[in-house]
Length: 189
Image (tube, helix red, strand yellow):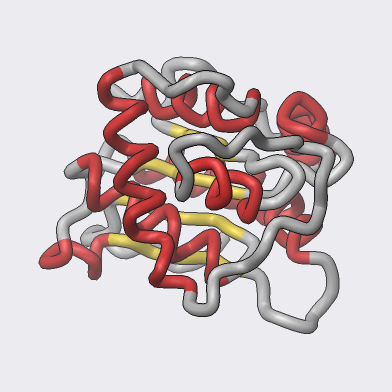
């Protein structure tokens, strides 16, 4: 298990820099993370070019879940996970994370834990396309939505999702993976 600082309040486990930028801006928009408190966020991100980023998240998840459980009595901690759904989709990724926990002898995530899993399907670019347009209809099977030129350009997208999740109202037609993300966020105590 890795080093866990008493200052860390949120751990982010994700595939890449775009995931990191999006979740950081989402958390800032919801008030869960302030710019002053960014040192309280520990990011575990797959290394670019070193194998499957999804596999990194899946294999690391049980360790981070165990660390979350060991620290939550000492500090206010949440574990936020983001990994692309690809062909597996939201339910498939949840099942894979559960299976990874079972293989490592870690009890699976419980509903009373501040552990949140966001699964953009097919990739986060589908979320960005939907959030960046008032009229865009998203096909979550489509793999070729354009990437942002800079990761930080996702701020208005993350802010829009935060507002919709906090108001518990997403505009229709909502991509199922985004609806699931707001449901995950709604569990945050």
